[in-house]
Amino acid sequence: MSLRDSGIVANFTEDAPPLKATKCGRTDCGAIIQAREDRHYIHGEIRKRSPNSTSEQIQFFAIDDRSLNDLLADRKFQGFTCDPAKACPGSLVIEAGSFLGIGTFKTAEVGYLTLLHLIAGRLGACANEPVAVKRMYKRRRTPTDANPNKWVLNRLTSADEHSKILMEANVLFWATSIMNFRYSFIYHFLQNSSKRLPFEIPEIRFVRAGVAIVHDQTTGPTTLKCSISRTYLIEERINESKDGFFKFINNGSAVPLDMTRKDARELSEFLAFTQHVQFYKTKGAVYLSDLQGSMQLLTDPQIMTSPLIGEGAEIFEDGNVPSAFNSFPEQHCCNHICRWFELPELAASVASDARSVISNSYLGR
Image (cartoon, rainbow, N blue to C red):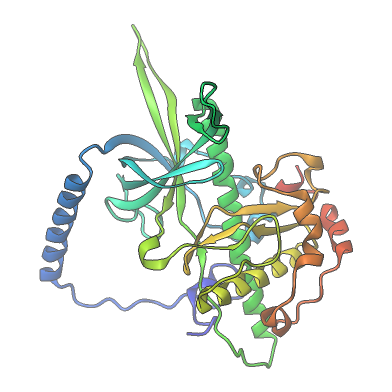
C-alpha cells in the first residue's frame, strides 16, 4: 500500500486523500458467541494468574492525537490537561509485583484497563485491555546500609506525582504529533517528486495512552469531599516477548545505537531520518530523542528543545539535555533516507532561528 492510500498520512495533512471506506460483511453469530466464551476464559485465567491483583475505580483522560499544525495554531490544544468534561470512568486492575521495568523516573507494572464507555481507536477500546501502568518514584539510599549502590524506591506525594505524570502525558501528547509530522513531510515530497520510492516506509507510532486518577472520598457531616490519591500514566502495552524491545537512539547522542537485527538497524536509520526532518522543519527548535520500543510501537520519548526556547525553563521534563541538542547538527550523520528525500546538511547556525519560529507558541512560553 502506498502512502497516498494509507490512512496514516491522511490524519496529518489537509491535502491528503480521505480514508477509504471499509466494507461491512455479514455478521457471524457463531463467531460472536465464541468470542464471548473466549473472553470469559481469559478473565478466568487472569484471576487465576493474579490472586493478589488490586482493582481501583478511576477517572480516565485519553491523550488525544492531533496534528502538529493544529497544536501550533490553536493555544487550546497546546498542552495536555485532565479536562473533567472529558473524563471517562472505569476500573484499573494492577497485578501485584508484576514489574515490567524500572526506569530512571518511573516504574511500569502489568495492568488491565476497562472503561465504562469504549471508544474505537483509543486506549480502552476493549474491556480488560492489557496496559502498562506507570508511576513516578524517587530513589532514597538506606542510611544504615554500607552499600552505597543500595537504594529504596519511594513514591512521590500525591500532588507531586500528579504534576509529574501530567508532564509525562504532555510529553507524549506533543511527541505523538511531532513524530506523525514525518508522514506529512513524506507525503508532500512524494506528491511533488517524479522519483520512485526505492524502499519501504516503516509504519511506527507512539503507544496510545492516557492518565488515570484515583480519588479518595471523605464524608463529612454535610458534604462529600474528593481528593486525588494516586495518578497513573496508562499506556498500550508492548509485547516484549513477541515483538522485542530496543533502544534505537538515546537522548545524549544523535548517533543510533548498534543493532544486531537487520530490521531494527533499518528502523533506527529511519528514526534518525525523522530527527533530521523535525530539526530541519522547525528551523532548529525541536526534535525527538530517547527513541525506544518495539518494531511497531515507541514509548518514553524525550522532546529535545533549543536552549534559546523558554529561557532555560523546564518545558518538557528533566531529560532535555542542552549539550546534546547543541551538538545534534554535528553528530547527526545523514543516511540514505535523508539523502533520498533531499534533506540539506544540518548547520549549527540553524538553531539561532528557533525563537522566531515558535516564540508565540506553547514552546515559547
